[in-house]
Image (cartoon, rainbow, N blue to C red; front, top):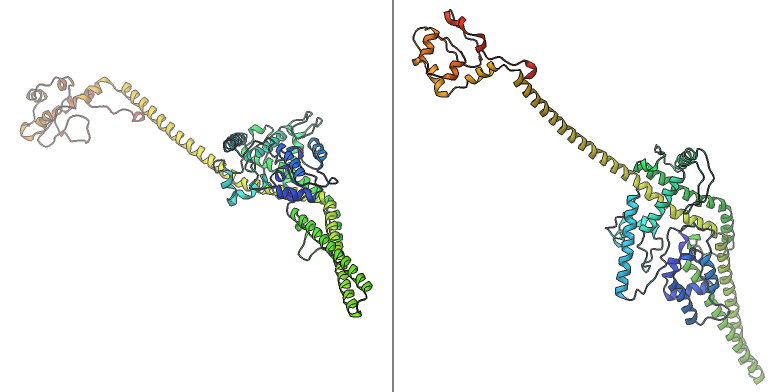
Length: 537
């Protein structure tokens, strides 16, 4: 059965305020010129002025005036069968929108409010129905947003100037959930909240709340494991979203329990209506919408007019037949007049029967609607709530992907920072090793190493075979034959060469046989470069 939000017995202030003058006249005619809405507090002041204007314009009979006392009474009443905090309130302030400047200013202010609600919702951990940058008009035409926007704006009336303002309702709903979170995490007495009653102290309230939440989600097939945190601010985003799912399931079960309790009464009333044979073959309970009853009323009005016309014809035919009798007309003429009267009476009988059937049909359907009103309201609310639940379930894997992407990003950032720190640590260790190596090396070794770094032209004079003596010579004679070099002389380094071997000065890379050179023993130990210990290499 379709949602009953558009039915005569269940209209909202935003819906009826958006009616045109013709639609408003039809509504008043069908409802005894009384306005009945589910949220009378949200009736705009200009709509009440329209009601007064329609009363004067339509020249209504005195016996059926618009009941403004009823409207005033409902404005201060609290609906008994509705949530004390409606999720679709219509703004109560109105301005003259015929002026272009006023309209733009009015729209700008509303857009600022919506933007503020949007960012509040996100900062508090909620998820908006659509990106505000997309705009309502664009989002409602996209498949992924169409259904959830139908939840926040059930009327979907293009003439409703406030239909696009949905973030205020979403932020208010999320704020109520956050309040419920805090209330369930304390054992002390609870004061009256925004939509919650006062409760006495209850030891172990949070543990009992967790148990009920797991059972509720399991009843609806949600068996994912999760663990609530006693501090809601320290709870991760996915767990909070799952807790919100359980919160909305609680609202759904409230309507579903009413349906279950009233189901037998509804079935009995429907069976009685079907057995009355007043329904057409294609008609079901889903056919009983607002304009369906307008059609029934119009059919009854048309049948009354047909009956009145048939009654007039019968009266005229009867008067003519009586005149014919007194005028002494022929039997043939009297018979013809009598046939016309009989036909007129037959049409009157048919019109009367048709009117009775139409009136009976309308009355039985109206009685069925009254008897099943509570059931249909609960069913409509449950169907409406299921839209939100489907959207919440669709967000669970999206939140998981977002959290996984965040974890991967943090891991990559940690690895990059760790690699940079390791490189810096190695560089510091290398610098410390180099400093320690310099401190461990003896000065004589440094001088010997530096002494080996002689100019290239000086080395070549030593290694040229033509410049070497043909016979082994003493160390003194070899020093005498060298060019004067203070640095090399101070190193006290000496190399003995024969005709078959050549040794380059500096660090030894290969062992050479010095044979039986008599002066090989005079090589000092300090003249050989020392290799640093392996732990510093």
